[in-house]
Amino acid sequence: MKSITSTEFDFPKQTSKYVGKVRDVYTIDNKLMVMVATDRISAFDVVLPKGIPYKGQVLNQIASKFLDDTQDIVKNWKIASPDPMVTVGHRCESLPVEMIVRGYLTGSSWRTYKSGAREICGVPVPDGMREHERFAHPIITPTTKAEIGGHDQDISKEEIIAKGIVAKDVYEKLEEISLALFKRGTEIAAKRGLILVDTKYEFGKHNGTIYLMDEIHTPDSSSRYFYSDGYEERFAKGEPQRQLSKEFVREWLMDNGFSGQSGQKVPEMTDEIVESISNRYIELYEHITGEEFKKAPYNDNVYERIETNVKNMLARLM
Image 1 (tube, rainbow, N blue to C red):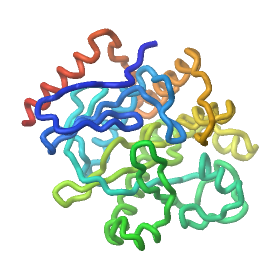
Image 2: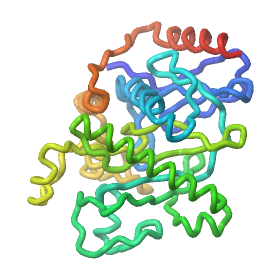
Image 3: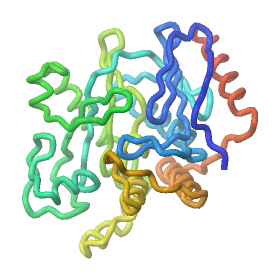
């Protein structure tokens, strides 16, 4: 199966290009951003060797929908999505923290808890909790944003403020916005028979105003979803939850001896593994949107299609 793992566009008035773990971001005239959601996939802050067909389209279209559905909570960077794999929007000055909101004790938070810790990023967690248990209230466990090739670092609210990474009033506003976004995402997911377990938000400033940046409520923003149906029964029995997220990718990697540590080798990604991951992303799209996923053509003209759609949009904006 074909996938798009790199792009080399040259747009009018292009001033820079940034290659992230899964996105290629083009800056236009230092005012606009063109974000191409590629089919690259990362886990444990490592980009895996094979792309996942249709993953970029899934992520872009879910994020675009949720950006539209949360504009009443906070302004966001999106202007338009001229192509199934692309969003064009305002260039913002990024704030150097990522706001991770957790509604349940699962994934990395469970691994930390299981090791004996009773505090996650400065947030106390009570004794006696079990894997996949719901927190009394969603908690925020922030990280500092990594440079290219680096790893995001857990940090507490108190450290962020004490070190002057983000001012106290700004951070508290980010907390307020993040919890409101998580509440909205939870409500939307519930209508689709899903539980929004945890997610990550990134923010920046545009003309002095806080804007929501990047993607939102997609599997690659570390969003994790459980199926509502059967959650209570599985939890009562201590069974694994049926989930739609990247956690199954992480678990597959760990089962095959890779957790992002130095010296470890990424296991072989067979065509069967790649196809199964692709199907899981499409499944998430259909569940979270309630719409059938329509695959954009993957042919020799796909790059030309993206370039033409973006250039036409930029011509209208500039």
